Image 1 (spheres, helix red, strand yellow):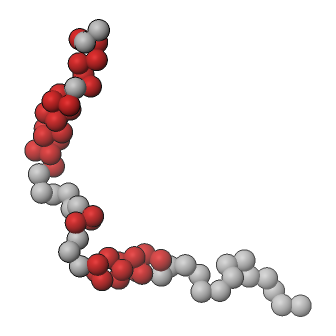
Image 2: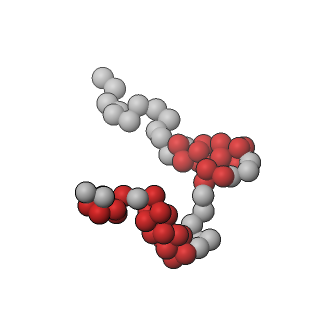
Length: 62
């Protein structure tokens, strides 16, 4: 029974996580560790700036 669930052992998962980390190295940014919270707010503001400033379903005036 122990052998059946050996693939779920923490040591086994840690080894595979290290292999994945070595593949990506420092090329993948971790956005959760950004130092400047204002920088995050500015980036989010740019993302949501595309929203329509008025009703998106415009109807002709009568």
